[in-house]
Length: 352
Image (cartoon, rainbow, N blue to C red):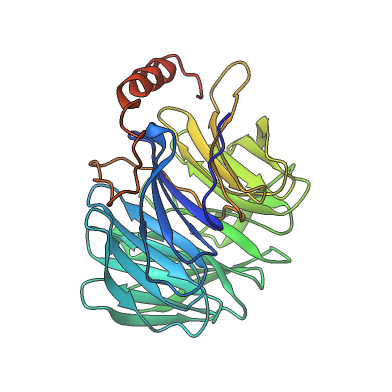
């Protein structure tokens, strides 16, 4: 396995198809790397004045939105290596966000106990969603239906109507902080939500009836992140017990366990078509997994960070030209051979 270390990074976002990584953390910069070229750093985005806590990437348009402890959100053009706009409004750290890139809107959650709906073109806060009694820890949006689900440190989940900025449903059951939520509001779903938190459990909810359907128990410590494929009824979760767990949501059965992190796993994201997953942890590593492998789903460290990795996501898009001398003299000489090796490995479903 290969480890890569620069700065005190703690947030990461990845592009599977071209093996790019966007990481950010305590050094207040966003680091763009090309993992396809063995993790070579191709440039940095600077503008935040404190730790970056969350990031969302639209690889197709090469834009990213980040939230920070400096209370601001910054919209970036990664291809041009510059910030486009800065958003002020939160009174405390920006902990989570969700973006509708097509409509140019975003929803952010903060330690100030509020969620703010933003117009990305005009740097304007369109609405403030208030009701949580403590930090807003996580948020998930169903943008076509203009709905959002948030989780708070007080243990409550709240369903919001974004058009009226009103809370339409409060779900209580978690005795402590809710760290991750997923939302399914398609016509065929009858309204489902999945939440996880400090109580070590995943909870499946029926939104139409406002009730708990079932609990998934197995983690030995707080669950920090989850990724759901509603079509196949499968879930990947991770937590402070240092493991990732694959579940069958319909039967509540624990299918498989993935070990490798030496400290708490803070985040995970899955490409459910290929079965490739990425995770980040407090051990300052990012790891790749083949969750559908029949034998060992061997992992590989894509990046080594000086601080905990807090967020991961995957996507694909156009190439981004390296900034200045960031790529270094040896980055491109081995590109062709390395690319052929990666292609062969991916075709054989081996995590490299």
